[in-house]
Length: 130
Image 1 (cartoon, rainbow, N blue to C red):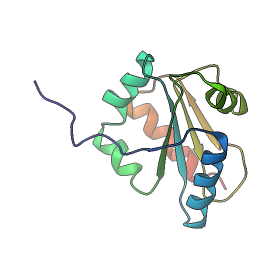
Image 2 (cartoon, one colour):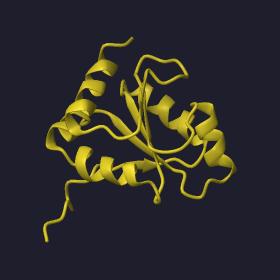
Image 3 (spheres, rainbow, N blue to C red):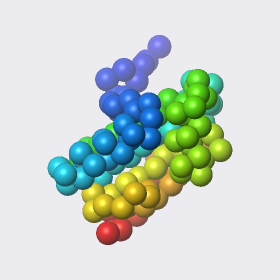
Protein backbone atom coordinates (compact mmCIF):
# COMPACT_ATOMS: atom_id res chain seq x y z
CA UNK A 1 0.00 0.00 0.00
CA UNK A 2 1.57 3.33 -1.05
CA UNK A 3 1.98 6.03 1.55
CA UNK A 4 2.29 9.78 1.42
CA UNK A 5 5.27 9.63 3.76
CA UNK A 6 7.86 12.17 2.73
CA UNK A 7 5.16 14.22 1.02
CA UNK A 8 3.60 15.75 4.13
CA UNK A 9 3.94 19.44 4.81
CA UNK A 10 5.86 20.28 7.97
CA UNK A 11 3.82 22.44 10.29
CA UNK A 12 4.98 24.11 13.47
CA UNK A 13 2.39 23.59 16.19
CA UNK A 14 0.87 26.59 17.97
CA UNK A 15 -1.32 26.09 21.03
CA UNK A 16 -2.58 29.60 21.81
CA UNK A 17 -3.29 33.02 20.33
CA UNK A 18 -0.12 34.32 21.96
CA UNK A 19 2.03 31.68 20.27
CA UNK A 20 0.33 32.35 16.95
CA UNK A 21 0.89 36.10 17.20
CA UNK A 22 4.56 35.60 18.05
CA UNK A 23 5.06 33.22 15.11
CA UNK A 24 3.28 35.54 12.68
CA UNK A 25 5.38 38.49 13.85
CA UNK A 26 8.61 36.49 13.52
CA UNK A 27 7.65 35.37 10.01
CA UNK A 28 6.88 38.94 8.97
CA UNK A 29 10.28 40.08 10.17
CA UNK A 30 11.71 37.55 7.69
CA UNK A 31 9.33 38.72 4.93
CA UNK A 32 7.29 35.51 5.03
CA UNK A 33 3.57 35.00 4.67
CA UNK A 34 1.94 32.58 7.13
CA UNK A 35 -0.59 29.81 6.69
CA UNK A 36 -2.39 28.55 9.80
CA UNK A 37 -4.14 25.19 9.52
CA UNK A 38 -6.83 24.78 12.21
CA UNK A 39 -7.06 21.02 12.56
CA UNK A 40 -8.63 18.32 14.76
CA UNK A 41 -8.06 14.57 14.86
CA UNK A 42 -11.80 13.87 14.54
CA UNK A 43 -12.25 16.20 11.53
CA UNK A 44 -12.76 14.22 8.31
CA UNK A 45 -12.31 17.26 6.05
CA UNK A 46 -9.01 18.04 7.84
CA UNK A 47 -7.74 14.58 6.95
CA UNK A 48 -8.89 15.11 3.35
CA UNK A 49 -6.98 18.39 3.16
CA UNK A 50 -3.89 16.63 4.45
CA UNK A 51 -4.18 13.62 2.14
CA UNK A 52 -5.51 15.22 -1.05
CA UNK A 53 -4.57 18.90 -1.01
CA UNK A 54 -1.48 19.43 1.14
CA UNK A 55 0.21 16.40 -0.46
CA UNK A 56 -0.18 17.81 -3.98
CA UNK A 57 3.25 18.73 -5.45
CA UNK A 58 1.96 22.02 -6.91
CA UNK A 59 0.51 23.08 -3.55
CA UNK A 60 3.72 22.12 -1.78
CA UNK A 61 5.84 24.05 -4.26
CA UNK A 62 3.60 27.12 -3.92
CA UNK A 63 3.87 26.93 -0.11
CA UNK A 64 7.66 26.61 -0.20
CA UNK A 65 8.31 30.11 1.14
CA UNK A 66 5.27 30.28 3.43
CA UNK A 67 5.61 29.74 7.20
CA UNK A 68 3.34 26.78 8.00
CA UNK A 69 1.61 26.72 11.38
CA UNK A 70 -0.98 24.33 12.73
CA UNK A 71 -3.37 24.69 15.65
CA UNK A 72 -4.67 21.30 16.79
CA UNK A 73 -8.05 22.02 18.37
CA UNK A 74 -8.90 18.36 19.05
CA UNK A 75 -9.08 18.95 22.82
CA UNK A 76 -11.44 21.94 22.44
CA UNK A 77 -9.83 23.51 25.51
CA UNK A 78 -9.90 27.19 26.54
CA UNK A 79 -7.01 28.17 24.23
CA UNK A 80 -8.55 26.26 21.31
CA UNK A 81 -11.91 27.99 21.78
CA UNK A 82 -10.24 31.41 22.11
CA UNK A 83 -8.31 30.90 18.89
CA UNK A 84 -11.39 29.79 16.95
CA UNK A 85 -13.49 32.64 18.37
CA UNK A 86 -10.82 35.22 17.48
CA UNK A 87 -11.03 34.23 13.81
CA UNK A 88 -14.76 33.49 13.63
CA UNK A 89 -14.36 29.75 13.20
CA UNK A 90 -17.03 27.38 14.46
CA UNK A 91 -14.64 24.44 14.13
CA UNK A 92 -12.11 22.90 11.83
CA UNK A 93 -11.08 22.82 9.11
CA UNK A 94 -10.08 26.40 8.70
CA UNK A 95 -7.00 27.61 6.90
CA UNK A 96 -6.01 31.21 7.56
CA UNK A 97 -3.48 33.21 5.57
CA UNK A 98 -1.55 36.16 6.95
CA UNK A 99 0.54 38.13 4.49
CA UNK A 100 3.99 39.46 5.19
CA UNK A 101 2.93 43.12 5.29
CA UNK A 102 1.31 43.36 8.72
CA UNK A 103 -2.14 43.60 10.20
CA UNK A 104 -3.63 41.29 12.79
CA UNK A 105 -6.37 39.78 10.65
CA UNK A 106 -5.91 37.08 8.05
CA UNK A 107 -6.03 38.25 4.44
CA UNK A 108 -7.82 35.07 3.39
CA UNK A 109 -9.79 32.29 5.07
CA UNK A 110 -10.54 28.89 3.60
CA UNK A 111 -13.34 27.15 5.46
CA UNK A 112 -13.90 23.49 4.73
CA UNK A 113 -12.26 21.25 2.19
CA UNK A 114 -10.75 22.53 -1.05
CA UNK A 115 -9.12 20.28 -3.61
CA UNK A 116 -5.64 21.16 -4.83
CA UNK A 117 -6.85 23.25 -7.81
CA UNK A 118 -9.20 25.33 -5.65
CA UNK A 119 -6.55 25.72 -2.97
CA UNK A 120 -3.99 26.98 -5.50
CA UNK A 121 -6.46 29.73 -6.47
CA UNK A 122 -6.71 30.71 -2.78
CA UNK A 123 -2.92 30.79 -2.54
CA UNK A 124 -2.70 33.02 -5.58
CA UNK A 125 -5.10 35.51 -3.96
CA UNK A 126 -2.94 36.00 -0.85
CA UNK A 127 0.13 37.06 -2.80
CA UNK A 128 -1.76 39.92 -4.42
CA UNK A 129 -2.97 41.46 -1.12
CA UNK A 130 -0.83 44.12 0.56
